[in-house]
Image (tube, rainbow, N blue to C red; front, side, top):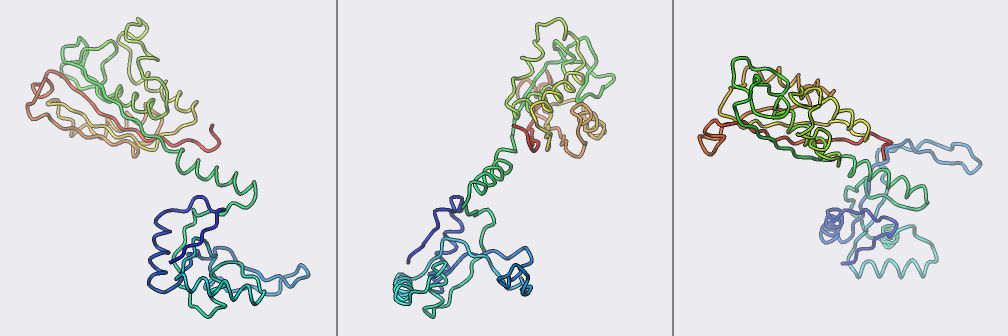
Length: 292
């Protein structure tokens, strides 16, 4: 078997190579191709439309193109003898009387012919691969604070508060660190040092809004934020909707982008003994188009 690939297509996926090889083994020859998405016109040679072609059966060929070695050599020899140029190996095989199987091509298998093609490809891959950033955050506080309990910006009257320099909102603290980490920015300790008197008993919702501003400045918006509370108490089932709304408001996003659930530690460890509360956060950011 022989596969011929155009070096001008540097982003070919291994799965496409495997698919072409499999089809060539089965049928003797194969070419990857994508459907024509635009309406196709035939030029009459004078700058006017001669006719509009039916695009339904039309396909745009890509590489790699594969065939049995003997078929490929025969087709190329015939092409040389005839003196008729073939635009690709598949056409040479067709002229040699071989049937060439079609394999679904890959729109990302771009052909780089001009400097503009290269620039477009870099922009496309930057949007696809570098636009999404993931971050993880974690925070834990023990019970015994002088303030009431606040989780995700929502107060829980009657519950013992948590110990912390600010209001010890573990949900928002974990969320802030996840978002800052995803953006490649310093953690919350950098922006709000625990020993700084300015942040003593600070409202974490206000701090979260400041973090949201840093994200916007860095060119990111929140794709989603997933929060897992680790606590024996309080039960948050009846407050989940309010907490999601509050967290979303703090970070200037929609509640639909915020996930929140809680789990117990089954009596294991300090958290399982009810000595405190912890929270894990995972954030997905999307870079705004045009941002560096």
